[in-house]
Amino acid sequence: MSGLPEDVSDFAAHANAIVARFSERLIALARRRLWGRISQRIDPEDVVQSAFGSFFRRASEGAYVVSAESDLWSLLATITINKLRHQRDHHLAEKRSVTKEASWSGMWQGVAVGPDALSDEPTDHEARELVEELEAVLTQVEPHQREIIGWKLEGVSNEEIAQRLDRTERTVRRALEHVYELLQRRLDAIC
Image 1: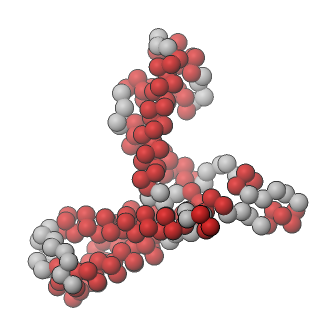
Image 2 (image 1 turned 90 degrees about the vertical axis):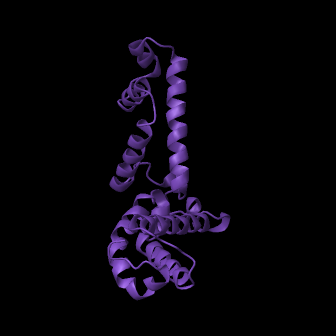
Image 3 (image 1 turned 180 degrees about the horizontal axis):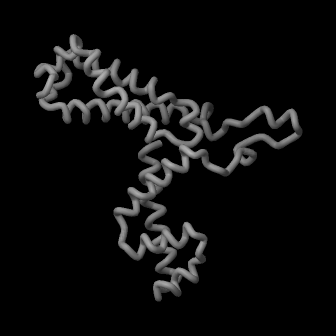
């Protein structure tokens, strides 16, 4: 294995090299999997630091056997994703749920506060993340379903899409529901 010790327990001595080699990729992975208001509470760098801490602690105990750099990446990515899930669950717990947050600044101006008062417009980062997820989902569907989604994103009605494809509106609705379900599963897995 190129540049990495064969015995995972020796990784403690090579910690700086491992952190230098994988930290940027892991931070990018964590950042991609955070979106919406939860991303305001969770710092990807903190998650990765925690993942490294767990990895090095368990590696020093001899808990891991890694035979290739790709195995090490997979292990670190899995630990990072599990840390993200734990953080997500923590921040979505009933009393501290991010969905119950409200901006207090609006109260001083006599404006209603709460989830409904927040902007419906996504940030640039959120929009990019959604586009990436949608593109990944669209690789899993039939060409006519991709056409339907494209037209729907352009604002074309279900009736007009059905006419363009010479299909029923029910077919259009089912295709939209199918893509929505695939996208929702991906988003649920991320959060």
